[in-house]
Amino acid sequence: MVDYSSHDWRKNTDDAVIMDANTLNKMPVNDSIVRFQNPKTLQVEEVEVSRLIRVFVNNQTHNRKSIK
Image (cartoon, rainbow, N blue to C red; front, side, top):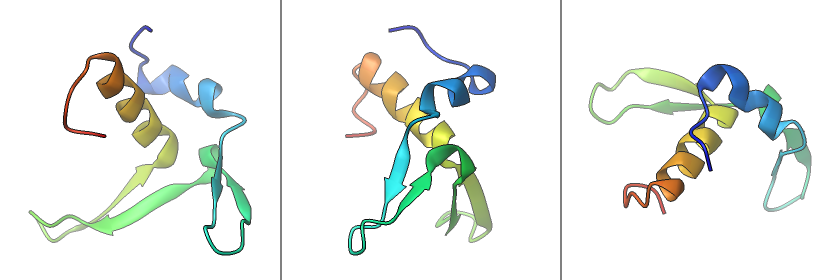
């Protein structure tokens, strides 16, 4: 698999969905963000879910241990 840059990754997640574990409601990945407090800076940050998928896939491809 080839590394994907952030500008072309969203086309690979068009059919991906996020599902609520309790209600099984679906939400498109490309319309979703994760908002969290960074434990190092204590700043609230936002990350697009499609970017998290790209990082996950690239880490698996390169056999990195940081994401399981």
